[in-house]
Image 1 (cartoon, helix red, strand yellow):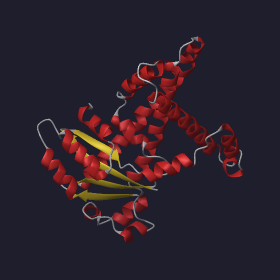
Image 2 (cartoon, rainbow, N blue to C red; image 1 turned 180 degrees about the vertical axis):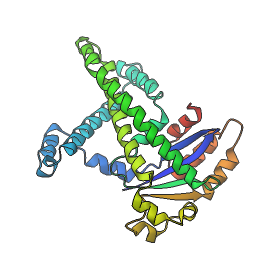
Image 3 (tube, one colour; image 1 turned 90 degrees about the vertical axis):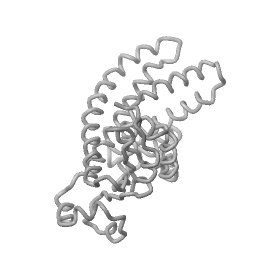
Image 4 (cartoon, rainbow, N blue to C red; image 1 turned 135 degrees about the horizontal axis):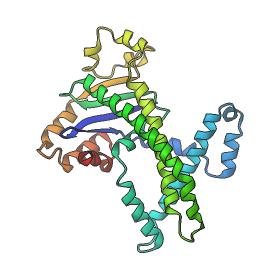
Length: 276
């Protein structure tokens, strides 16, 4: 599966890394997720899933994630002033602290086998790819550490189940454990995709500079030895950035225009402007 990544400076040394939203992909993924325990059991007990224990774990995690998303939606629809509405407000506050790089890495699922990297035409393509490798390698280290830390806290927060109130600490730590696991998987997959392998180096020998300044070629895409990444310099993105540049980085209106043009999540992109 192909994913479109958009990379651009948003404020000083802060760069934005985001993946274009693909509604058809999210709908297909949700349709493949079991909706009931009965469907879950049928899927993990099938012959194809039985041959792969890792696939069964993925199905269970996706099932739990789907249930968490539905529970979150019910909190969002709760009447104003109710306990569920207050819990939803607390959840929004906690979610606002999640780093945008984590959200980006989580979007690089294991199904992604190729990335089309769109970036301003004024930037060097190899620099853009190095920045992607850096965020992937750094993310693999950070999210592995926090995954272990969050998993360690799960048994401790489960003791709050005895209280008559909703066990918010447990569900938050459970979500963070799941989030770090997905981000770790995304980091490792992205690092594999944007790192040169031996056969990729042979295919790019003598044409490295040209590959950073050409648009997607169908013949290159269909070539079995073509790299799983394609660099796509964009004049449109460059013009949008030039029109909105200031001492404080890109304006919110410019960020909104970029998100609309390249189908990005505006709130996630704006987080990069204020990230450290």
